[in-house]
Length: 357
Image (cartoon, rainbow, N blue to C red; front, side, top):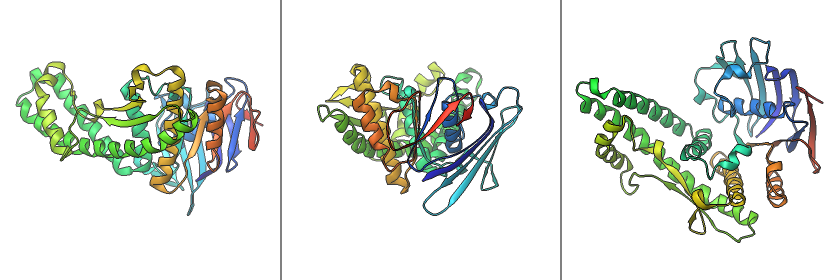
C-alpha cells in the first residue's frame, strides 16, 4: 500500500498543507520544531486513530483555531480509500472512510497499515513490560480485527473487576461477582495470549534474520512470549484456574494480578536476558530488528506492505544500523524525518515553520 496524498488543516503548527508522496522514500528535512514530526503524527493518527505522542486530542489543534482536520488517500492492491478525521474544539474526533462516518476505532484498523519507529522505540528493550505489550497490541490490532476486539473486551472487563476489588469491603456476594468477571477475562484473555504467542513465534524468525545482518552474525537474538499462565492444553481453562488461585492475593492488593495484562516479551541475546543486561548498542540493534520484523509480519499476514514511518531515528543510529534500515526501505513506502539528509533516491521535502516546500 502507499499514501497518495495528505491534507492538513489547523493540525499542530500547520494552518493549511497538502502533500503528495512518492511510492518510495520520502524525506522530510528541516530544523528542529519545524513540523516534521507533526506530519508523521498525522499519518499515524489516520491509521490507529490516536497520536503516538499525546492522549489529549485537543493538543492536535493549531493554537488559535477551534478545530483540526486531516484527510489522507491511500492506495491498496485493489482500491483506494480516503480517510478523514475532524477534531472539534473539545477534542472529540469524527471519522469517515470514503465519506461514510465511522463509529468505532476498529472499523478504521487495517485501512492504512503503518510501522512507526522513533527514538522512543529504541528504549523498547529496557523499558517496562507495558511498552512491549503495547508493541504487540499495535502490531496485532492492525493485522487482526478479532485481536483488537478481544483486547477491548478484556480491558473493559479487567477495569470492572479491578473497580470491584478496590471496593471489595462493601461488596455483597463478592466471590460470585468475581466469578462472573473471571469467566469474561478467561475467554478474552485466552484469545489474546494465543494470538500473541503465535505472533511472537513468527516475529522471532524475521527479527532474528534482521538482527543477524546488523550484528554480522556475531550474536543470536531469541524472542519468546512470557506469561504466568500455563500454555499447554486448554489456555482458557488454565487462565480460569490461575485467576481463581490468585483471588485472595487480588483481594488484598485491590487489583487483578494474573492475565495477559501482566505478560511480556522475553528478549535474549546468546541466552542472556537482554532486558536486564543488554548494552545500549545491543538494545538499539534489537529494537531495530524487531521493527523490521514487524514490517515483514504485516506483509505475511495481510498481503500488503505497510507504510514505514521513521521519525528522527537516523541520528540515533550508527552507520551500520543506518545502512541496514535504509536498505530495508526498498519496496516499502517510507516517510522519514531528519535535520539533514545526504542519501540518494529520495523525494525531498523541506519543512520550515509549518510549511512544506
